[in-house]
Image 1 (cartoon, rainbow, N blue to C red):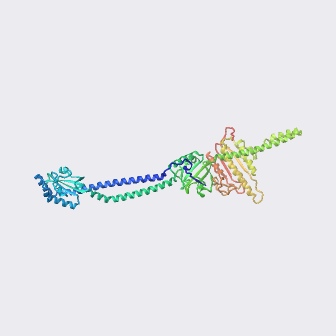
Image 2: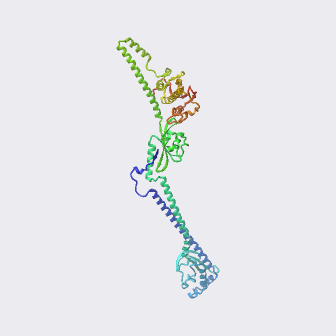
Image 3: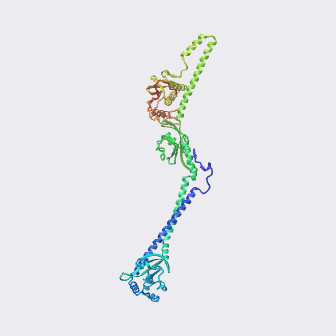
Amino acid sequence: MDTVVPVPGDRRAPTRRGLPFSTRMMALQLGVVVIVVVLTAGIYGWLSYQRLVAEIGSKALAVAQSVAVEETVQKTLTDAADGGSTPSNAALRDGAVQRIAEALRDRTDSLFVVITDQRGKRWSHPDPARLGETVSTSPEEALAGRESTSLATGTLGPSVRAKVPVWSPDGRTVVGEVSVGFSTDDVAQALNGAIAPILAVAALAVVIGATGTALLSRRLRADTLGLEPAEVGELVQDQAVVLYGVSEGVIGVDEDGRVTLCNDRARRLLGLSDPAGRTLAELGLPPRVLALLEAHDGDALPGVQVVVGGSVLIVTAKRVTRGQRKLGWVVVVRDRTDVEALSRQLDAVGALSTALRAQRHEFANRLHAISGYLRIGQHDEATRYLEEALGSGPLKYPVDFAGRLDDPFLQAFLGAKAMRSAEMGVPLRLGAATLLEGRVSDPQNVTTVLGNLVDNAVAAAVRGARADGADGAAGAAAWAEVEVLSDGPTLYVTVSDSGDGLGDADQEEVFAEGYSTGPTGRAGRIGQGEGFGLALSRQIARSLDGDVWVLSPGTAGGPGAVFCARLPGVLDLSGEEVMA
């Protein structure tokens, strides 16, 4: 089934009212874009204005320089400097200097071309009435022999002007100056021609910025699933509480099958080091776990059992959705190793309890018989019967040749297994080569390995007996045999049965997780909750530097397969009994 992600605001105090975070982010980003574009356009316009001023100043300087080297102008101003006087306004109006200046002004479309003598008196001017007057701006820079350009305001208004000294023909004396100016309206007109592309680019930049901001805001809403920052923070806190506060392992997987989060419990159970960003297949997880995410969106299989690192794990997977959007998967890993061990011990305890009840019933029957003899006065018969009861001892477990085994733990455990197998019509016996020195010091691992092998042998014997009698004829007698041998602290166990063996099955494949020859399926079929006994037994044995293997695959019609187990370090040779 699907898991729906809740909205934090639905279960907490309402968030602060106002515009959504994504809208505020969009407005802020758009404002920044507009400010940057306006600032950039303003700076570019100012730089363009300065460039135009410099270009027009250079043009004015070139015009002024051409006038300053005019031969007539030089000779006229030199003669005026020698004479020490300035002609009258009427004489200047008809003078050669005025005609030269005005002709040049018309050709260059300049605002003015003003020529002065050493005293700063105008010899030329667009307004003839001002001829002979002193110029409105200081001529000192030019009269000192230096050229200059500036932005200044004179009698004709603001202008970009250049001032150039006029030297005498021999080049020794400054006899006047030439001032050429272009109106700032010319600069504005040139700037107007350049400002249109600037404004077009600025408008385009604002449009692009607004579009990008809108797309970014939309992506932000999609990535945050419409949640506000406070809600995202709450989800992060909840995630930390859930992931690291639960006893189960939790793995988050996105739609691409890559791990996005994994808590410490899952890392320990699955033996993962750095799972983030890797797929489940790359992590080496069993195929049955991968099948959870592939089978009908994870709804077909509520959970599977796998064996990883000697532990029995139950793995479940659920799809996570928000609205109509699929977000990925949550894989939950639970450890059932302790439960499996306790279950086997509980089975043994249950069988022992049944045996004790049988013992109690048998002893009660014997006491009733003795009581009857005494009531009828048959004291000699009562004494003889009591001696026989004491000589025969308590009720024996149905384990053939049980006297070959002295360890009390194995006696009790195999006795419990024998009672259950006897109920299924399969007697359990000890092999003739059984020889055990010392006592079991690791009952949990021995119980798991030996119990799985015995259970498989009994089940195989039952199936073999049913197959033999399927046609109505009496089948061969079923049996299961356990042979125990010690070699120092190492315990060797051999388990065989009267079943039909493994057939054509691969001897290594039977130890694979999920491999089952149980009553719910044929050999090799993966059954829910089946096919983990041999895999777990081998992993436990190998964790002790031992192993479990197939000694003989058996034959059809019997005898069946023979399994061997080697469990180093599970025996105590000190002579002290170790209780389970």
